Image 1: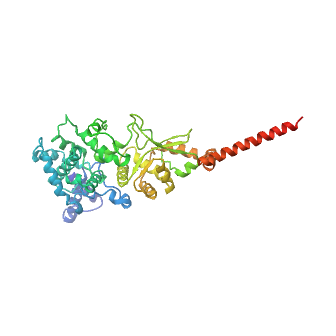
Image 2: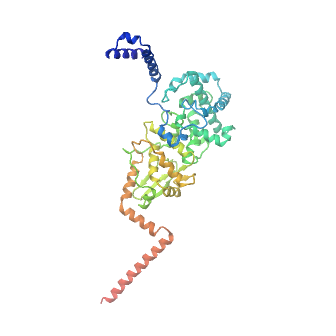
Image 3: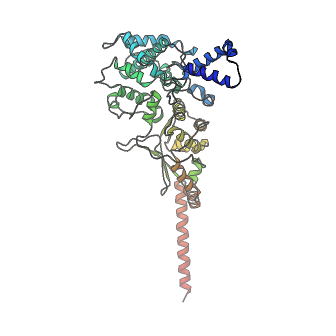
Length: 449
């Protein structure tokens, strides 16, 4: 590669009228060419389909804390951040515990296994990892064993400083699902195999159960079932890229519907839809059928919009933002981006939020409906949405809202039948009117010979 680049440069310059002897004697040009060739060699291994990458600056401006690790760095992108250096001691402590298990292997074997994966692991990142091979391998061993020991501690109820102190516990868990703070899944898998018996507990089910029990709860509410029951759940098809990718798999439908051809914004908020006669219902799981966050449907004949419950707390924004950022860099169905945009237009005012809270669609732990409005008003900013997953639902809602009869009928119901007493009064008035008409007809019949 270096020879080719030099030949190209010399040939180009000769064609431009430069003298070969002058070029050879110009040390500055040679040094510059060598420097550029070295940089080209450094980026030659970078792949176009990387899985771990920086979040766009525009996203960071909206909420940088949602993407930047606060307690622990995983991987190289925040490895040198000064405020995360204090965790190195705890990583060493966890590594020591991970090695000193009944079936544990020597540190040398751990290093050898990760060393063999070094080249493949570097390709998972979107930028040049400015670390020597020794430092890169050490980082992966420490980070991987820290994660596995932490999950093992949680899974089997072991006593530990982080797990006992909830503030540390939740902050570390939050760091593990941030897009810029990921480790390739295959590194974790190889480290796991050095300690645990795969015949008794496969790595995938171990990790999958922990993701369900500790991360998915942030959006869907409590997940019922013991650790043993969680192990029996179906596993993802295909290769999992990292923790955030697995969390996305947990939360998206296994049999999705077709996405729309383009993004269709909803022009009417929840309050306006209610005025047009739309009824809101909380969609729940039925039997063995699991309800996903994206199982939103609208019955045009009955005018019923059903939306699954979403939990709004301190974790919700962090989870949604990182999943949206991940989707923005992947060739995949933009579930979370579509959801954020749909909810942004649906919840335009605190009145809209209050309506959905009353219906059980939103479980709000913020307390203030305005916080719900602010959350969804910013999630979709600076995103690009090609195929809209809720295109059909939005289209049907728009058509329903435009029908004059639906508006009139809903207005009549909300004005005259909004309370039991109003309904009784209207019923009594209608009865009196009916009796008056009957009396008038009888009087006319008596007059007519």
